[in-house]
Length: 278
Image 1 (cartoon, helix red, strand yellow):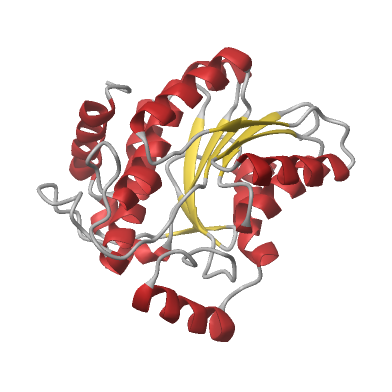
Image 2 (cartoon, rainbow, N blue to C red):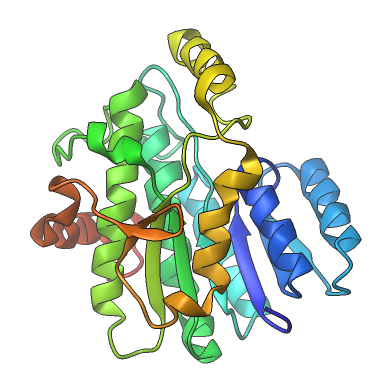
């Protein structure tokens, strides 16, 4: 990874932070997108301590807001003429029908639409790199999702989260199709159920349930980050595109996640909402 530029969202905690540090240790220059300036600075200090000597940098944005997604995507594209890896990793789970300032469902906007917008705005520097990779964090929770196009913004809790992760897989499939012949690949992954800060702000029964499950079943963040790092760096997946991976191996997602007509419809809907990627 020496000399390569990696853009990653959700890198100030959890598996994103572990993956960013590991890729920095492999020699990559890391560009993080974070919401909190203080945590971004702490992450940059940690990356610099990894010893690669690269000029890691951070951009600040709230990835639940459309205008912030567009702004930070344009800023990164202007600053980075070449991007070797884009890692879409930011995400959350929330209870209740929480809406963004754009009137979108919070989980749909953060977990899916931010992936769509950033990817669309960074395609030019990704193509310029030659052999670039797009890696998106999905989840086995996609099997609990329901792709109801009339009510995508209204789903809550575990169903809403599962639907946003189903969107990640469908987005990856359609993106891979559209990128055929460009040299840019797109894959997504299930990191496993990981003991991180994820879900701590969800509130109510969701937070309580996740807290108990983390104590009983969860992987360590280091284990959870392995597939992310594998897809970003391993020569074994060079040229492979459109896949869903679990434990560094190809996996088969649900039947709903393999419906290409839904993938195309989701793309068209996302492009209409975001006004990018059409």
